Each structure stands twice: as C-alpha cells, then as structure tokens.
Image (cartoon, rainbow, N blue to C red):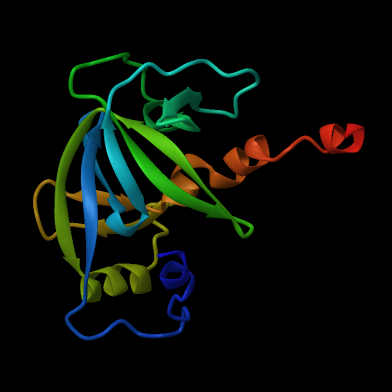
Length: 178
C-alpha cells in the first residue's frame, strides 16, 4: 500500500473526463465543510483528549489510538469559534498529513459528521481556475451544487501541518546527548 501511495500522478497530469473526488463532510458551528476522503484514515468517536505540554496553537491535546499517540487539532478554535466539550455528536477524524516530506497522522475534532459526497472534478477545476481570492486560507474549493454549500479544506493548511510537524520533530538536543 505504501508503494502505491508513493506512486502518484505528476501534478501536471489532467484527471480523466468525468472524474469525481470524494469528500467526507462535517459541520462545525453550523457551517459545513469537507475533506478529501483520500486523506482520511478513520473516524473515531469522541474520546478523552489528554493535555500536552507546550502545544502548538489550536492543538487540544493528544489521544492514544491503539498505542499510537496522535495530536488532536480543535478546528473550532482554529476557526475562532467558542469551545464545546464532549457533545454527543462530536468525533475525531484521523487524517494523513505531509509536510516537507514527513508524513504523519493527526486528529481533527469536529462537531458532527456528515456524509461522503462525490464532487465532479470539472466543478473543482472551475473553482480553482476562478481563484480562491474570495475564500482565502485553507480552502481547496467550494462545493455548491448541493445545499448546504460545503467548503472543502486543504487538510494540511486547515490544521497547520507545518506547525504540527515542528512540534512532533525530535529535539536535536536529545540526539546530541545520546
């Protein structure tokens, strides 16, 4: 599976005609969002999130998922919304991230899970060609063929993969001591 995921099409390759991108949808604070399902590892129910020392901005803490410690980003906080804790419909989306060639996983705390939708690649290309100046930041594209409108996010930008990667990097002082 790793070899297949490493053999990706070059960025210049055009998607085939009629191609679709599947996105998992969710809501936060009444707004509807989506993530490319190819970046989603799994979805887990709300669980205890342990505080971490010196967390990166918007990191709520960490979870233990089958022996693996993963940081959890509070997307509500990142979007400037007031915190809520442990609501029955809250869950954590585990995503695959990549920054500067380093791959890792993190969780995204969301209010409510939606559904998987298929978005026509031509509509995405049209949105990208028009530019996202009206919707800056971590927005990959806006899916408006259905109601409610869904803002599909670039997962690396939305949760701050660069900041998380820096926090997860080993401390160089520790390697010198060894």
